[in-house]
Length: 417
Image (cartoon, rainbow, N blue to C red; front, top):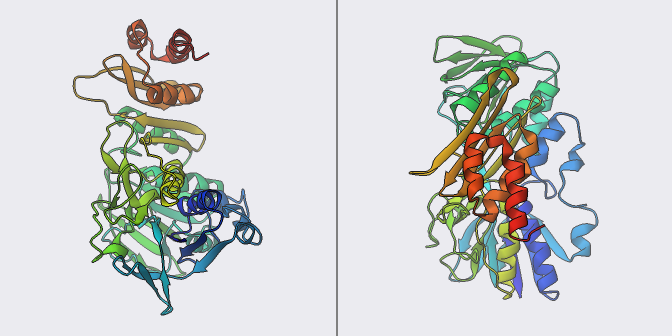
């Protein structure tokens, strides 16, 4: 059996290892188009902030692990997938045939239509090569403009602050991380960052970037302001890498459409990770969830089905946890609430504390929090377990900080303790 995986990120690596355990005699190859060993993009901020060496981002020891597992690593770009012939065409002109194929090509940054993005001082922060370029320009004391204050942008923000740069952040939304936190929570993050010396511009966009003397650039803002910078980083969202499948007949939407076995509309082709549109735990709808825990879960389940061992994906809880210059925020599940649902809230702006609980009947279905780190694990546990809160719902409506007591009481009643 010849298993081929396109994509050398966490989904692809976990899938290859799972396949090796499930099918010891199979031929397994991972094809990746970057000139690096398989690595985790989530480790790049730690590399930027000098917490790890570049090799610390590697998913496995490239000198020993893959050879010991008898997993072939191929550093090439796949140009075409022929599902009828079950064959791949590579950029070097070679072809590879497969019995089962996994698409784990991930996603790529989306560049906004801003004049000047082609300048050498402008970079995204998505690959190790991007990180190397950023490190050269983000020297202590240098001025850096970060375009985008979403989840990825705020992770980059943390790393840049640790590098000692003078940072300005531009966000088109009316608050930071608008797809993760509501206005009150996002506002706390905004105020916190300003207090920490970060120049935050919300409800603002970039009109253009122009070259200046001494390898500097000028960033023109929609509010009429102008910012000088040695480096501009774009973090304005990502898009699933589905272009490779054009003309294959495989069904796509925002990502590759898969069933609960991670199987595409072509029976011998599977998809996993950021590129796959898989089932969402909270809604049952099929969505793209670009987070590493989802990618690894997808990869494992896809591999089991490729090896004929079965298994279904029952959905991944949408979750984000963010440490922004010392202030921790999080959101889980349907944090924005459901129709006809109830909610409970605590807001203390002076202490940078916020917690919001969202209910559907007596189930906790979503939550968000700022500055209340002791609740993070419990919030996730209550949502994922779908426990009936009973009388504890009314108590939480009065005091949402009693979440730990509610969790202990409800799980003890069910005999979980």
